[in-house]
Image (tube, rainbow, N blue to C red; front, side):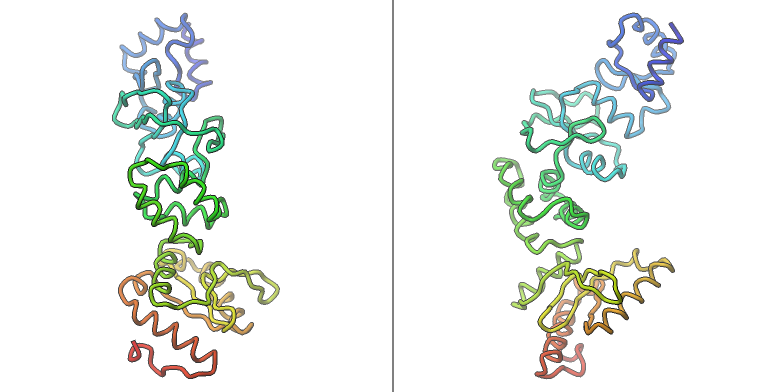
Length: 300
Protein backbone atom coordinates (compact mmCIF):
# COMPACT_ATOMS: atom_id res chain seq x y z
CA UNK A 1 0.00 0.00 0.00
CA UNK A 2 2.73 2.44 0.95
CA UNK A 3 4.66 1.50 -2.15
CA UNK A 4 1.58 2.14 -4.33
CA UNK A 5 1.04 5.57 -2.77
CA UNK A 6 4.70 6.39 -3.20
CA UNK A 7 4.53 5.40 -6.87
CA UNK A 8 1.38 7.46 -7.37
CA UNK A 9 3.00 10.54 -5.83
CA UNK A 10 6.10 10.02 -7.92
CA UNK A 11 4.05 9.73 -11.12
CA UNK A 12 2.03 12.82 -10.17
CA UNK A 13 5.08 14.89 -9.26
CA UNK A 14 3.91 15.04 -5.67
CA UNK A 15 0.22 15.71 -6.46
CA UNK A 16 -2.56 13.11 -6.73
CA UNK A 17 -6.31 12.86 -6.81
CA UNK A 18 -7.33 11.33 -3.51
CA UNK A 19 -10.32 9.66 -5.14
CA UNK A 20 -8.55 8.31 -8.22
CA UNK A 21 -7.68 4.98 -6.58
CA UNK A 22 -10.02 3.86 -3.84
CA UNK A 23 -7.50 1.41 -2.41
CA UNK A 24 -5.22 4.37 -1.66
CA UNK A 25 -7.88 6.24 0.30
CA UNK A 26 -6.86 4.98 3.73
CA UNK A 27 -3.17 5.50 3.01
CA UNK A 28 -3.86 9.06 1.89
CA UNK A 29 -5.95 9.73 5.01
CA UNK A 30 -3.14 8.52 7.25
CA UNK A 31 -0.60 10.71 5.47
CA UNK A 32 -2.91 13.72 5.73
CA UNK A 33 -3.38 13.10 9.45
CA UNK A 34 0.38 12.79 9.94
CA UNK A 35 0.91 16.03 8.04
CA UNK A 36 3.11 14.68 5.23
CA UNK A 37 0.28 15.27 2.74
CA UNK A 38 -2.00 18.32 2.62
CA UNK A 39 -5.37 18.81 0.96
CA UNK A 40 -4.91 21.28 -1.87
CA UNK A 41 -8.43 21.29 -3.33
CA UNK A 42 -11.48 19.06 -3.02
CA UNK A 43 -10.28 15.56 -3.89
CA UNK A 44 -6.63 16.60 -4.44
CA UNK A 45 -3.66 16.21 -2.09
CA UNK A 46 0.03 17.01 -2.38
CA UNK A 47 3.24 16.57 -0.47
CA UNK A 48 3.45 19.24 2.23
CA UNK A 49 6.82 20.62 1.12
CA UNK A 50 5.42 21.29 -2.37
CA UNK A 51 2.10 22.82 -1.33
CA UNK A 52 3.10 26.47 -1.89
CA UNK A 53 4.87 25.80 -5.19
CA UNK A 54 3.12 27.37 -8.19
CA UNK A 55 3.61 24.36 -10.46
CA UNK A 56 2.18 22.09 -7.76
CA UNK A 57 -0.84 24.34 -7.46
CA UNK A 58 -1.28 24.28 -11.23
CA UNK A 59 -1.25 20.49 -11.22
CA UNK A 60 -3.72 20.44 -8.35
CA UNK A 61 -6.18 22.65 -10.25
CA UNK A 62 -5.80 20.45 -13.35
CA UNK A 63 -6.77 17.41 -11.27
CA UNK A 64 -9.60 19.25 -9.53
CA UNK A 65 -11.12 20.66 -12.73
CA UNK A 66 -9.54 18.95 -15.79
CA UNK A 67 -12.02 20.75 -18.07
CA UNK A 68 -10.79 24.16 -16.92
CA UNK A 69 -9.01 26.66 -19.18
CA UNK A 70 -6.13 28.64 -17.70
CA UNK A 71 -6.15 32.36 -18.43
CA UNK A 72 -4.60 35.64 -17.26
CA UNK A 73 -1.12 35.59 -15.73
CA UNK A 74 -1.37 31.81 -15.43
CA UNK A 75 -1.69 31.58 -19.21
CA UNK A 76 1.22 34.01 -19.63
CA UNK A 77 3.38 31.81 -17.41
CA UNK A 78 2.43 28.68 -19.33
CA UNK A 79 3.13 30.28 -22.71
CA UNK A 80 6.44 31.86 -21.70
CA UNK A 81 7.67 29.23 -19.26
CA UNK A 82 8.29 31.96 -16.67
CA UNK A 83 6.84 31.21 -13.23
CA UNK A 84 4.80 34.20 -11.96
CA UNK A 85 5.96 36.09 -8.89
CA UNK A 86 2.58 35.53 -7.23
CA UNK A 87 1.72 31.79 -6.96
CA UNK A 88 -1.94 32.30 -7.90
CA UNK A 89 -3.68 30.09 -10.45
CA UNK A 90 -6.44 31.50 -12.67
CA UNK A 91 -8.84 29.06 -14.30
CA UNK A 92 -12.03 29.52 -16.33
CA UNK A 93 -14.85 27.02 -15.78
CA UNK A 94 -18.10 26.50 -17.65
CA UNK A 95 -19.99 25.99 -14.39
CA UNK A 96 -20.23 28.28 -11.41
CA UNK A 97 -17.68 27.28 -8.84
CA UNK A 98 -16.33 29.35 -6.01
CA UNK A 99 -12.62 29.40 -5.27
CA UNK A 100 -12.14 26.91 -2.41
CA UNK A 101 -8.68 28.28 -1.60
CA UNK A 102 -7.26 31.84 -1.77
CA UNK A 103 -4.60 30.97 -4.34
CA UNK A 104 -7.08 29.66 -6.93
CA UNK A 105 -9.18 32.17 -8.87
CA UNK A 106 -11.97 30.15 -10.45
CA UNK A 107 -14.11 32.18 -12.83
CA UNK A 108 -17.26 31.09 -14.61
CA UNK A 109 -16.55 31.80 -18.24
CA UNK A 110 -16.93 30.09 -21.60
CA UNK A 111 -13.74 30.07 -23.70
CA UNK A 112 -14.54 29.05 -27.32
CA UNK A 113 -12.42 26.14 -28.55
CA UNK A 114 -10.89 28.33 -31.26
CA UNK A 115 -9.38 30.50 -28.53
CA UNK A 116 -7.79 27.67 -26.57
CA UNK A 117 -4.49 25.93 -27.07
CA UNK A 118 -2.76 22.98 -25.42
CA UNK A 119 0.38 23.76 -23.45
CA UNK A 120 1.99 20.89 -21.60
CA UNK A 121 -1.21 18.89 -21.59
CA UNK A 122 -3.46 21.62 -20.17
CA UNK A 123 -5.89 23.98 -21.86
CA UNK A 124 -4.79 27.62 -22.03
CA UNK A 125 -6.16 30.75 -23.71
CA UNK A 126 -4.23 31.45 -26.93
CA UNK A 127 -1.61 34.26 -26.82
CA UNK A 128 -3.83 36.89 -28.49
CA UNK A 129 -6.74 36.37 -26.11
CA UNK A 130 -4.39 36.11 -23.13
CA UNK A 131 -2.76 39.44 -23.95
CA UNK A 132 -6.00 41.31 -24.68
CA UNK A 133 -7.66 39.86 -21.59
CA UNK A 134 -4.95 41.44 -19.42
CA UNK A 135 -4.78 44.77 -21.24
CA UNK A 136 -7.08 46.57 -18.83
CA UNK A 137 -4.77 45.63 -15.94
CA UNK A 138 -1.25 45.72 -17.37
CA UNK A 139 -1.64 48.62 -19.82
CA UNK A 140 -0.62 46.46 -22.78
CA UNK A 141 2.63 45.06 -21.32
CA UNK A 142 1.67 41.49 -22.28
CA UNK A 143 0.61 42.64 -25.73
CA UNK A 144 4.01 44.29 -26.21
CA UNK A 145 5.82 41.17 -25.03
CA UNK A 146 3.86 38.85 -27.32
CA UNK A 147 4.27 41.20 -30.28
CA UNK A 148 8.04 41.19 -29.68
CA UNK A 149 8.03 37.40 -29.55
CA UNK A 150 6.05 37.38 -32.86
CA UNK A 151 3.31 35.31 -31.23
CA UNK A 152 0.55 37.73 -32.21
CA UNK A 153 -0.23 40.35 -34.82
CA UNK A 154 -2.36 43.44 -34.48
CA UNK A 155 -5.14 41.76 -36.47
CA UNK A 156 -5.14 38.89 -33.96
CA UNK A 157 -5.55 41.34 -31.09
CA UNK A 158 -8.52 43.04 -32.75
CA UNK A 159 -10.17 39.67 -33.37
CA UNK A 160 -9.56 38.59 -29.78
CA UNK A 161 -11.05 41.85 -28.53
CA UNK A 162 -14.28 40.96 -30.33
CA UNK A 163 -14.67 37.83 -28.19
CA UNK A 164 -14.94 39.90 -24.98
CA UNK A 165 -17.89 42.23 -25.66
CA UNK A 166 -19.27 42.22 -22.12
CA UNK A 167 -16.13 41.82 -20.03
CA UNK A 168 -15.50 44.41 -17.34
CA UNK A 169 -12.79 46.84 -18.44
CA UNK A 170 -13.61 46.44 -22.13
CA UNK A 171 -13.44 50.16 -22.89
CA UNK A 172 -9.87 50.32 -21.60
CA UNK A 173 -8.98 47.17 -23.53
CA UNK A 174 -10.21 48.82 -26.73
CA UNK A 175 -8.03 51.86 -26.07
CA UNK A 176 -4.96 49.74 -25.39
CA UNK A 177 -5.49 47.52 -28.43
CA UNK A 178 -6.02 50.55 -30.69
CA UNK A 179 -2.81 52.06 -29.32
CA UNK A 180 -1.07 48.82 -30.32
CA UNK A 181 -1.72 49.32 -34.03
CA UNK A 182 1.94 50.13 -34.66
CA UNK A 183 2.94 46.98 -32.75
CA UNK A 184 5.14 48.28 -29.91
CA UNK A 185 7.56 45.77 -28.41
CA UNK A 186 7.78 47.39 -24.96
CA UNK A 187 5.83 49.86 -22.80
CA UNK A 188 8.34 52.72 -23.46
CA UNK A 189 8.01 52.12 -27.22
CA UNK A 190 4.24 52.28 -26.82
CA UNK A 191 4.65 55.62 -25.04
CA UNK A 192 6.95 56.96 -27.76
CA UNK A 193 4.44 55.96 -30.44
CA UNK A 194 1.75 57.86 -28.57
CA UNK A 195 4.03 60.88 -28.19
CA UNK A 196 4.77 61.03 -31.92
CA UNK A 197 1.11 60.69 -32.82
CA UNK A 198 0.00 63.38 -30.38
CA UNK A 199 2.64 65.71 -31.83
CA UNK A 200 1.39 65.10 -35.36
CA UNK A 201 4.69 63.56 -36.50
CA UNK A 202 4.06 60.95 -39.18
CA UNK A 203 5.98 59.09 -41.83
CA UNK A 204 7.41 56.47 -39.48
CA UNK A 205 7.22 52.71 -39.24
CA UNK A 206 8.01 50.37 -36.40
CA UNK A 207 10.27 47.31 -35.98
CA UNK A 208 11.83 47.94 -39.37
CA UNK A 209 14.25 45.28 -40.59
CA UNK A 210 17.40 46.62 -42.22
CA UNK A 211 20.74 45.10 -43.19
CA UNK A 212 24.16 46.45 -42.25
CA UNK A 213 27.52 44.66 -42.32
CA UNK A 214 25.74 41.60 -43.66
CA UNK A 215 23.49 41.35 -40.61
CA UNK A 216 19.80 41.93 -40.06
CA UNK A 217 18.89 44.55 -37.46
CA UNK A 218 15.55 45.90 -36.30
CA UNK A 219 14.96 49.58 -35.67
CA UNK A 220 12.35 50.41 -33.03
CA UNK A 221 11.06 53.32 -35.13
CA UNK A 222 12.29 54.33 -38.55
CA UNK A 223 11.65 57.33 -40.79
CA UNK A 224 12.82 55.40 -43.85
CA UNK A 225 12.48 58.35 -46.20
CA UNK A 226 14.85 60.43 -44.08
CA UNK A 227 17.12 57.67 -42.81
CA UNK A 228 16.36 58.54 -39.18
CA UNK A 229 15.97 55.80 -36.62
CA UNK A 230 14.66 56.07 -33.06
CA UNK A 231 15.76 53.57 -30.43
CA UNK A 232 14.40 53.05 -26.92
CA UNK A 233 17.13 51.93 -24.53
CA UNK A 234 15.98 50.03 -21.46
CA UNK A 235 18.31 50.20 -18.48
CA UNK A 236 18.73 46.52 -17.65
CA UNK A 237 19.45 45.20 -21.14
CA UNK A 238 22.36 47.56 -21.75
CA UNK A 239 24.43 46.72 -18.68
CA UNK A 240 26.15 43.41 -19.43
CA UNK A 241 29.54 43.73 -21.13
CA UNK A 242 28.72 41.42 -24.07
CA UNK A 243 25.44 43.27 -24.62
CA UNK A 244 27.27 46.60 -24.66
CA UNK A 245 29.74 45.22 -27.21
CA UNK A 246 26.97 44.04 -29.53
CA UNK A 247 25.06 47.27 -29.04
CA UNK A 248 28.02 49.47 -30.03
CA UNK A 249 28.73 47.28 -33.07
CA UNK A 250 25.10 47.55 -34.12
CA UNK A 251 24.98 51.32 -33.61
CA UNK A 252 28.17 51.97 -35.59
CA UNK A 253 27.31 49.67 -38.48
CA UNK A 254 23.84 51.20 -38.84
CA UNK A 255 25.42 54.68 -38.77
CA UNK A 256 27.89 53.68 -41.48
CA UNK A 257 24.97 52.32 -43.50
CA UNK A 258 23.48 55.83 -43.52
CA UNK A 259 21.14 55.79 -40.55
CA UNK A 260 21.03 58.74 -38.19
CA UNK A 261 20.12 57.18 -34.84
CA UNK A 262 18.50 58.87 -31.88
CA UNK A 263 18.41 56.94 -28.61
CA UNK A 264 16.08 57.67 -25.73
CA UNK A 265 15.59 56.20 -22.29
CA UNK A 266 12.15 55.42 -20.85
CA UNK A 267 12.61 58.26 -18.34
CA UNK A 268 13.35 60.80 -21.07
CA UNK A 269 10.25 59.75 -23.00
CA UNK A 270 8.06 59.97 -19.91
CA UNK A 271 9.49 63.08 -18.24
CA UNK A 272 11.07 65.14 -21.01
CA UNK A 273 8.79 64.64 -24.02
CA UNK A 274 9.31 68.10 -25.50
CA UNK A 275 13.06 67.54 -25.68
CA UNK A 276 12.49 64.13 -27.30
CA UNK A 277 10.22 65.72 -29.91
CA UNK A 278 12.73 68.52 -30.52
CA UNK A 279 15.44 65.93 -31.17
CA UNK A 280 13.20 64.11 -33.63
CA UNK A 281 12.08 67.25 -35.45
CA UNK A 282 15.64 68.56 -35.60
CA UNK A 283 16.99 65.33 -37.06
CA UNK A 284 14.24 65.13 -39.66
CA UNK A 285 14.88 68.75 -40.68
CA UNK A 286 18.62 68.14 -40.91
CA UNK A 287 18.26 64.96 -42.98
CA UNK A 288 15.76 66.62 -45.30
CA UNK A 289 18.14 69.54 -45.85
CA UNK A 290 15.88 72.19 -44.34
CA UNK A 291 18.12 72.87 -41.36
CA UNK A 292 18.71 71.60 -37.85
CA UNK A 293 18.48 73.32 -34.46
CA UNK A 294 21.95 73.61 -32.97
CA UNK A 295 20.65 72.85 -29.52
CA UNK A 296 17.65 70.55 -29.12
CA UNK A 297 17.27 71.46 -25.46
CA UNK A 298 17.00 75.15 -26.37
CA UNK A 299 14.62 74.36 -29.23
CA UNK A 300 12.38 72.39 -26.90
